[in-house]
Structures are given as structure tokens and as C-alpha cells.
Image (cartoon, rainbow, N blue to C red):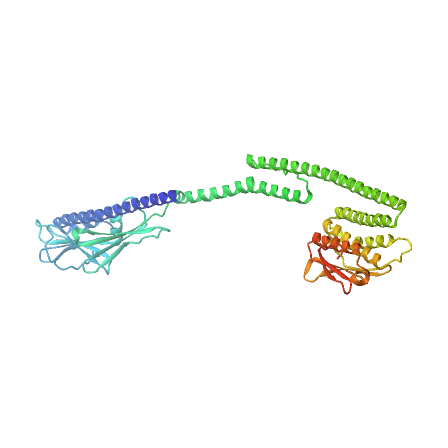
Amino acid sequence: MIASLASLETAKANRANREAAARLLVTDSAERFNLAVDRVTSILHAAQRRGPEGCRRAIAAIGAGSAAAVFDGTGRLVCSSRPLTASLPLRRTDTAPIVLIDGEDETVRVIASSSETPGWAMAELPRDLLAEAAHPHALDGSYSLRLSDTVGQQINVATMQTVPLGRDVLADLPIAGGQLRLSMTVATAPLSANEILLTLLPILMWVAGAAIGWLVVDRLILRPLASMQDAIERYRISGRFEMPPLTTPAFEIRTLGRAFLRAAMTISRHEAELEDGLARQTRLTREVHHRVKNNLQVIASLLNIHARSAETPEAIDAFATIQRRVDALAIVHRSHFAELEVNHGIALRPMIGELASNLRASIPAGMPSPTVTLDLAQACAHQDVAVSVAFLLVELIETAMMRVPGTSIAISLDEVEDQPERARLTARSPALRRDAAPVDPHFEQFERVIGGLARQLRSPLERDEGIGIVAIEIMVMPDPNLR
């Protein structure tokens, strides 16, 4: 902006210089016209002294197209180049000639007299002669001249040719001793190519700088960054980073690309190490589960062996009771191992079904088998909840089938309305009524155990001893694969 303003100020200064030069030319034209009038006056004085021959000599001296006449003191025509009429001048012209404008003929009359010779002389100057006399030096036809007097008469001596993009300068100067006025209109030249270039050069420099800056940023920065972005997107999808060819001279972008390549390689190496570690951890976890399962099977086998060698019915019942709980724990363990494989929790429906089947199979010989019916919703639970549920069902089913052999037992698992994270586990059996059999120490121990398991499940135990219903709400996690 500063450079543009400086260029404009320079152009204005040059324009002002040209206008001043144009005004000097106007002054020069006025002086040339005054010199022409003085010359004509001198010629008329000479013609007045020579008599009749003076008119012809005056015409030859003034120029082609002009006219001259000499009058005596009485106003009688002495000689003339052509018929002229004139009245006596209103004043003597000893000091300065009289200059008048004839608007009809477009001529200027110069009347001069001398104190040495009676009479006076007159000359008519045509417009072409006036234009030639007043033509300023060093100026072509790009100007106009107009002569005017005090009574409103005027002559257009020269007509200006319009210059494109130019500017008119008007000057009005008195001539012929103030008898006439010379009005000159000069068309100054338009701005030159150098001035226009100097004015527009800062703007062109700014446009060029903006274009070059955009080109540099686009080719050397934005496009390499776009290539890097595409490579990163491919890396996000495929997991493999391919370094794009970076031809930019920007050292920082190339360094960024190499840094991201190293980071991608480090991430890939860490992912491979994590996958190997996860595989090892999975193998170790499976080994631990297999060993726990084998240990539970060993415990179950030992209990079975000792139960067969027991001598009293009480010992046999004790071994059977312990074995049922070990079997329940084994079932939960197998379900927990499956839960680790799929990460959806322990499925309660197959676990409860297997648990009920094992309990029916553990009935002592000669005792009628109970009728167990299941109505279970699809749901999963964490290991802690599953263990407590398994032990609770073992207590319920075992107590029911021992108190009333051959009884019916209904196990149901229903979702709680508006609470998808909870389910209601219900056991219904006539053997669970308090008056279904005599209350013995085993039944009192059963009530203490199920009370403790309810506290383990963190939910109140609901009992209806008149009908034989035991219910409790448990925390579940719905299995998306089972829905």
C-alpha cells in the first residue's frame, strides 16, 4: 500500500509538472500574439508614411489573406487593398493601437496612428493568420484558442483535437493591452506507460507474491500432507503403513513422515508382542482350568470311593451331600471356562439344566426320583453369581427330594420387568413347605445356608412356606447371542 501511494504521488507530481508546462505554453502564445500585434502596428505606421504605395507593401509584409487601408486626417480613404469601410477612431492611437474583433468576418482589426503623420491606418487579420501567429512553441494541435473582447465578440482561432484519457487545462490571459482576452485550452497528455506501470507494479507484485505463495504452499506443503493423510487412512484400515514418496524440499514434512513410519513400525511390533502374550496367557489360562477341572474330578472320585466304603447310612449321606456340591462347583467351573472363551458370562440355562440332571442322578438307590421341571429364560451371569445360584439350587433340590421322596420341583428363571440387568429365580415344590415333613436339624441347617447364600447374592430371599415357594432376584447380563 505504501508503494502504491508513493507511485500515485509521483504520478500526480508528474501531472502537475505537465500542467505547469501547459500554462507556460499559454503565456508563450499570448506573448506571440502581442508581438504579432506590435509588428502589424509598425507595418501600418510605415504604410501611412509611404502614401498610396504603402497599402500594397503593408499587405505583402503582414501576410496572405490580410487586408490594409490608410485614411487621412479627415477620414478619406487614401489607399486600400480591397474596399474597406471604417469610422474614425474614438481616441488617438499614439501610445497603443486599437484592436477590435469582427465576429461576422472572423477577423481582428488593428487600427494604428502616428503623431508624425495625420490620419490613421487599419489592418484586418484573418483567423488563419491569427492561428499561425499565436501558435505556441513545442505544442501540436491538442489545444484550442479563442479571442474575445469586452462587448462579447469572439473568434475561435484554433480547435483542439481531443486526446484520449487526457485532461483539459484552461488559461485566460489579457492581450493587446487588455483590449482582448486570449482563452487557451490545452489537453495534457495522458499517463504514460511508465507511470501506469509504476502505479500498478506494487499491486502486480502483491498478486504475484500471493500466487507464488499459494503455489509453494500447495505443491510443497499441502500435497505432501495430503499424501501423508491418505497413507495414514490406509494404515488405519489395513494396519500396514506405506511411506508415500515425498519430493517436497520441506525438511520438516520429510522428518514427520519418517517419524510416523517409525511410530507405525513400533506400534506393529507392540501389537505382535501383545498378540503373542495374549496367546500365551490364553494357553496358560486353559491349562489352569484343565488342572482345576481335573482336581475337582479327582476330589469327586475320592468322595465316591470313600462313600462306597462307608459303613453307616449317615456317612454315606454325608459323602453324597459333599459330592453334590463338588459336582455343582465343577459345573460352574466348566461354564466359567466357556465364558472365558466367548466373554459373554456364564449361561444360566444350560448350567441349571445340567445341575438338575446331576442331582436327580445322585438319588440313593431305592428312593423314588423327583420330577424336576425347568422354565428358564436365556440369561448370563458372572462367576460369583453363578456359584451362589448353583449352591442355592443344590440346597433347594436336595432338601425337597430328601424331605418328600418323589416330589415335584419346578425351577423358573424370569426377567424382571423394566430391569434387564435383573432376573427372578423361583423354586416351587410342596416339599419346601414347613409342614411337609417334621422339622429336623437338617431343615434348620438348610434355612441357615439359604439365608447365607441370599446375603451372598445381595438380595432378599422371598419365601411362601404355605405353598412351598422360594424366590430371589439375581444380577444377570443378557447374552446377545442367545436373544
